[in-house]
Length: 100
Image (cartoon, rainbow, N blue to C red):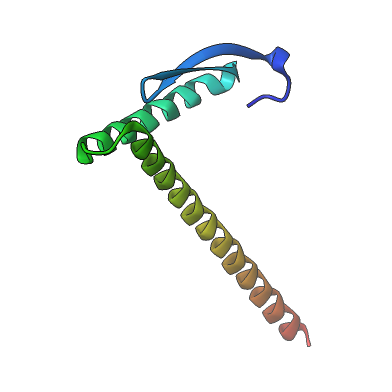
């Protein structure tokens, strides 16, 4: 989200039936609303799957799903960076050995 409140406009999003007023930059509103829809869809899936659970339980399960996906994405990014660095170092090593 933008750094200054002056660049942001107030909007309201509804998550799990509860409205949340927030401020968002114009260029981020569409993405934020898409994310809110995705959150509500996952929340609703948990409510259907676990009818005996209350809203808070379903929200926590939704949060854990996102946290797990974020951790996996970070791990993949870290592994990708390490592999790329190793590949570059190997090429550099080959280049140096070829010059000797």
